[in-house]
Image (cartoon, rainbow, N blue to C red; front, side):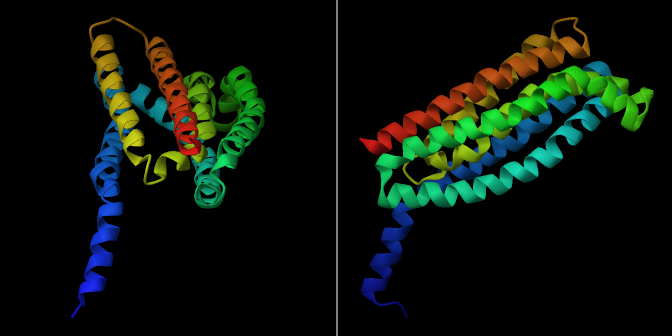
Length: 221
């Protein structure tokens, strides 16, 4: 049986980390739903052939970048946690440096896919997948900004900031629903739909970046 001191330690740890189940689980659910919503919208309004073209484009762009981004998140989160404990004054500089590294390393890929996405898809997959190439030329902006910002998200995984991460996920979810509701009453093409979706992602992930830097600044105070 646990003695009184052990029970107190367990209770103290539980109270210290209670934010994680309160915010992380609902935030993860909202994120999963938000990722699937554009697919259902495209299927409902544009049909299965457009869904297939969109699905191929997003998979080709996402799979390699997601693997790299997830690996970088793990590495940077260890550094972020260590700096937060030992020398939080260096955390903002660390985040800023890695933001510019990620941004500059992504720029060449953005230019290549934006200008050559369609011919590359035609060459690799055949001309029947030309629409996927057109989609990729637009989707690269959304994929790139997520790739740049996600590895820095470890700041919002710190116990003191986990609620801020949830608030952003909730904001993203609500604004996406609002956007899709607005577009559902418009007679638009798939390309125009993607442009709206990408503008939404760029704006929301820029807000995400500001929240990360705001959270670093609060840590340093």
